[in-house]
Image (tube, rainbow, N blue to C red; front, side):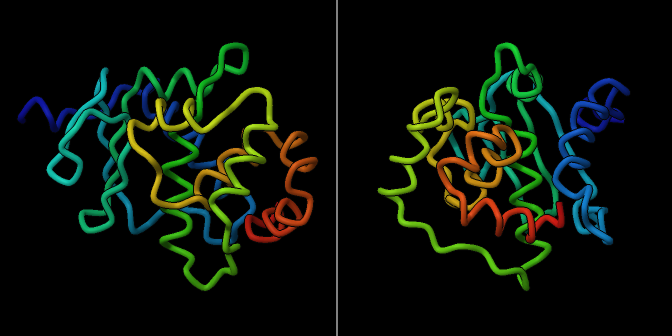
Length: 169
């Protein structure tokens, strides 16, 4: 077996699974059945699709996600938290697997201004954690809703109610 194909250690599986479960917990169809491969690195990595160092990538064609384990673990630490790339990846997968759901159309300028009002997070911190500017503002918004529910309710009250409905929470 090639080095890249070793099975993940149990603690690393758990670090990935806890994010997957958090995103799909309220769903009847809670498995990410179209995505069955997850890869980890201990550092930022380039890929053929993104030929620069980054920390998370969802590949829709190959049905897989890749994580920088160091940043993934830091996203789980509530005392010294960075933007949670695990939730971010599984929100992207959720949106991909549920195109029938009604997602908001976000104004980029207004969105980032409101994000700046949440003390623990900002655009630069998000880009720094991911390694690139995110393509989907909904993925960022929903990740922040999972990470900072109280602050999110204050900044995005209507969207937060829609979020609860979308994720059946």
